[in-house]
Image (cartoon, rainbow, N blue to C red):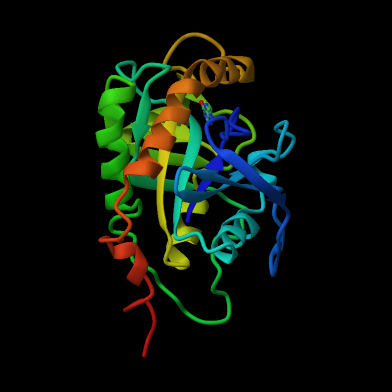
Length: 259
Ligand code: HPA
């Protein structure tokens, strides 16, 4: 089953599907938000709104462990996430969709692993699932006039936006976009041997990339404009991805622990 984690402005995605039930799961890490299970043609899909409906949960208060674990409990083996991001470069414009292939983790306070009682070191040479990424990118050609293939997602702790010096540093380090919610989600998914890819919606230029002040209204406006494209891209990706997983994600724990 495919799991979708909807980011800012993406609280439901079932318009073309058939909603079956909505449920809250009790995980060892706490309760999940209400997860919608719906049918899309011959497939069952689980949808989890990362910020809960109405965006009342700030990025540093999200229970990433409960969210990822709840999807695993439902039998989800792949996660497609959406993340609103700021662009670090003028050439990457608000409204564009980018499929990251690497990350820089600047989070500070979030529980970032499922393994505190044994030493498990998962490999993140390819942190985002290559098979899922490829399927999104090939579907993106027809729907959105092309998505950007690859880029480095920088995750900050938030909830404030960044300073110009931080943005300058991130750019020098090779960052492409900046957001507050991509980590530790991507790593937690890998620790449970789930595939994970993100569709990043560029909602604004990051602080000092443009002279304008960064506002949350701007972020929501752009996400609202792109939602139709995004929904279609997600639906077509789910319907066209090969059933068999031919990526490293499903064996992530092999070689991660001393035998
Ligand atoms: N910075 C951090 N997170 C964000 C931004 C940004 O500019 N835009 C959307 N999420």
